[in-house]
Image (cartoon, rainbow, N blue to C red; front, side, top):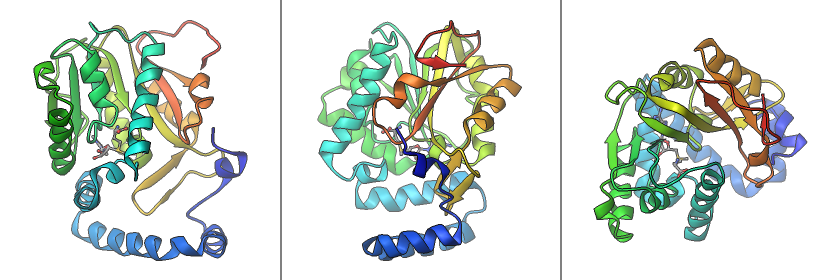
Length: 268
Ligand SMILES: C[S@@+](CC[C@H](N)C(=O)[O-])C[C@H]1O[C@@H](n2cnc3c(N)ncnc32)[C@H](O)[C@@H]1O
């Protein structure tokens, strides 16, 4: 669970940056490198998806695991397991169909592919580099016979997918790197592909203060901004309290076409 201090911090404010630099001097060179890359990539790529695709290309060249946010293999395995166990605890069974938006190099995806019946896993990503790394994960894990679908996309209209098809749609650590128009595009279209009784879970970097972003890489939203956006597109949205207890830095919202029954794990 994010601490109160993290929930109110505005990382884009000058005072915050100065305080952070003084207390974490070892992180300053890395941040300056990222800031210089941000300027250059933002100049070259006007739309966010092209920009972030270039960020992923640069990060994946160095390490696909670090590019999805896990600098060590141990951390990569642990975070994949956290996602997998959570969905198993929420009723995922092998016969269900899953759409994993921003699947990365299959940190969690390989576990879902292994568990689900062949052909039931669909992974989407904007980054060709990370999808090549995903194919490597698939091969290393010997999961060829599971025939997962891995698709490169430039938008989240989901237009190539059928109506009412997916029991679970999942986006872990994707909206934490997305401006609001990208999130809205997804929320405007995800209802069409959800099967009856299906749900869409996504994580986000939560703030209870001012919404802000760091470079064009990390975005911080208030819960009500995202639940309100889902509602404007005719969906129901719940804050997942049980996810908060697992110690992951991000929060989780579940979106459904029908209202969710009241339960301690959800806060409507
Ligand atoms: C931090 S990684 C997380 C990957 C994976 N969900 C996991 O937890 O291992 C974020 C992934 O989302 C992808 N991504 C970012 N924006 C996206 C978008 N608008 N549509 C699809 N994928 C996106 C990135 O390329 C990257 O692979």
